[in-house]
Image 1 (cartoon, one colour):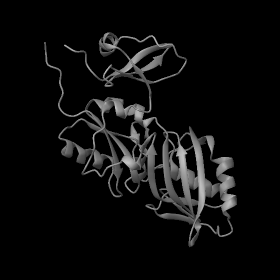
Image 2 (cartoon, helix red, strand yellow; image 1 turned 60 degrees about the vertical axis):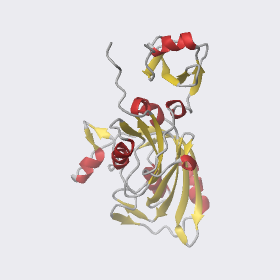
Image 3 (spheres, one colour; image 1 turned 135 degrees about the horizontal axis):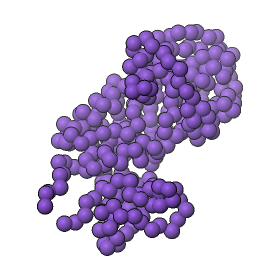
Image 4 (cartoon, helix red, strand yellow; image 1 turned 30 degrees about the vertical axis):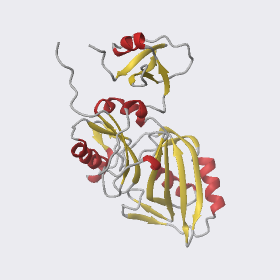
Amino acid sequence: MAKRRNDGPDGLVVIDKPAGWTSHDIVAKLRGVLGTRRVGHAGTLDPDATGVLLVGVGRVTRLLRFLTAMPKTYVGEIVLGAETNTLDAAGEVTAIHDMGGVTLDQARAAAAQHLTGDILQVPPMVSALKVDGKRLHELAREGIEIERAARPVTVYSFNLDAVADEPEVLLAGVQCSSGTYVRTLAADLGTHLGGGAHLRNLRRTAIGSFGLDEADPVEEPTLLTPAEAMRDLTAVTVDAEQAVKVSHGQRLALETDEAGPWSVLGPEGDLLAVYERVDGRVKPAVVVKPAAT
């Protein structure tokens, strides 16, 4: 029987991404640090943004879609009165507005009324979203702007506070669904307040339960186990006999109305697979641990 391939470690790294690094830069660096090519990230951060970046290693790269789907939490600053072509401080100013009369209460009311809950959001041209096989930011660099369909996203909370000594800057705290662009929230807030705005100093403080308190610098990564990587999913523990069936990708009979997905753990607490409901049946989405041979 052919030996199963295992070319390196398996797990999750929580990185505190510094400014000036792309998410791909982090992946490339970790490939060298960890000595494996099987590295990928969940939830892209712009080069100027900092904070939590989840990086899958080995078999956990196959689980990244479950991490990407988790809610995200950010802090940043919204600069009222200036629009930019990238919607953030890295771009060129395209319009100036006199918004000195806008109060914090007015900004909070606009955020609560128009930009909290289930909303429709138009992705920015400087995003990594693909349209007809090409990323929007690649088209933007060519000077091309195309129509983008608004997409449904959920903003669970959008809190605003004043910034000392900068009356036209607001400190923003946002918790939102995957796929939400905070720079677009900033720009849209400016529009709803009768002018324009852009975002600066964006920092992602959490993805799901993975926060800055356990994030490492890219040079000193700590590898969490595959089971820890899926800790935000509802866990189902199976016995030794069931574990063999799970590792062969057989279905599970779960007495639950939950939509899933579920992490399936063996008797020792190791992650065997992630299952999800498809057409009413609970089926394996990813089998992580092969059957014992």
